[in-house]
Image (spheres, rainbow, N blue to C red):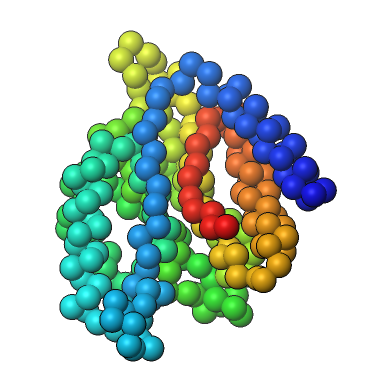
Length: 222
């Protein structure tokens, strides 16, 4: 229980800091979900050892449907945080073709086991072009072996009646914690707590340095 207590105390401390820093700022709408990268998704018939990515006739219509769903349902979101983004040129072109007029796309790729070769998937953030935020940059934070979080540095656009000096920096965290694959649930909890702590610490440092607001989303399986 000790690691959970430490994580809970740290979460409360960071949450209070973020609450203090966001007082009086603009409202944001942030959407987050896992789009299930074709390189990890089994084929629907379950009879093949190959992943969905081996079948263009399978992954392409699903990617088109996901991108269209984002446009239809979340087109007014200021940011859409996606986990399991596939770094395939044609896959990216699908999203650019359907969402390019509405959103800017920023993606960060996961490192491989040796730290040199890159994995085919990672994290992606879509930021609405006419929304409340302009993007200053995107970076990855290593949270474990072959695991990352994405942190997007944004700035509020000028609100009506406000000056440019009143614009506030905003940091958004996009996370995908480790799959709880160990038979011991406590081991899974500790691993995810460590990863969450790394993300919170990275966000806390940036918020304090820039006197910024913060937000986040992601997936945590248990």
